[in-house]
Image 1 (spheres, rainbow, N blue to C red):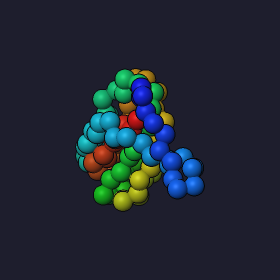
Image 2: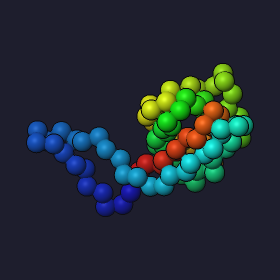
Image 3: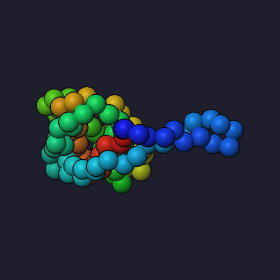
Image 4: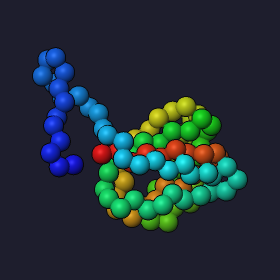
Amino acid sequence: MTGATQLVDDNGKPIQALRINSTQAVDGTSATTQSTAFTTVGIIRVVSNVDINIAQGSSPSATTSTCFIPAGSIEYFRVNENDKIAVLGGIGNITLME
């Protein structure tokens, strides 16, 4: 991010916040489904209103044995260029942060 200014609180301490870039709704309701590939290294935010499982990689497949995210939870992950996120069990909202 070019020209970004670090936000600080009243005590001069950095505020840990990220800007929203783009969001994908990945529907893995009936079968494991992949997001589109990320074109940059970054941080993603994953949330769903139902329990889901996710997997990460260049061609991931989510199963009931991969990373579990309970309904309503918000999780953050680092992604590499060309990574995808696979979702199983519902719709996973995946937001690339910057």
